[in-house]
Amino acid sequence: MENQRSQLLRLAVESRLLREERLREAGISSTVISQAVKAGELIRLSRGVYHHPEAELDENLSLSEVAARVPQAVITLLSALQFHQIGTQQPHAVWILLKQNAVTPRIDYPPLEVVRSSVAASLSAGVDIHTLNDIPVRMTNPARTVVDCFKYRNRVGLDVCLEALKDVLQRGLKPVEVMDFARIQRVASVIRPYLDALV
Figure 1 (cartoon, rainbow, N blue to C red):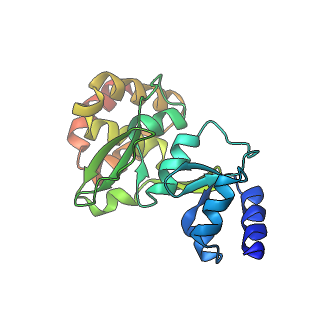
Figure 2 (cartoon, rainbow, N blue to C red):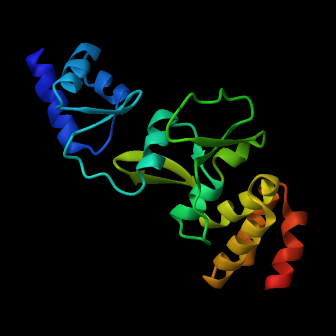
């Protein structure tokens, strides 16, 4: 038991956020985890996600917490816009993309906005992995994020789409990059007139 406890504390000090799955893989029992939480040596952030009391967590805590709980999710739309510093959106929830038939995660906090796609490539094309608070976070890149805004324009609003498109073009993103993802996401005919007007 003591060996597990010291191993747990070592892992907690080495990582900003810890998934329960990782602790179990390291051979640490749920009893030892519970004892460490009761003793104040480990803080339970949410179900299955922990951190050391002195861990320095950054401003992407909500994104990394959701990624730790729902590793198959892709951070997208307003959350990805904010991460990439595109436009002026301040999302009230973490926006995630899931497969069409995936079960909706039960997470009370942070709040979630879930969008779904039946296009297989939408879970991989233009999706990068960022390590935030020691958690791998799958997130759409800037071009793909803008395209997704147009795809889900009824959810985010056309004004958000246009602001994001103008912003990425001013930063030097090539229209061809946007159109490549627009074809994959089946919104090329929607985006093209706006792109033509801005270029």
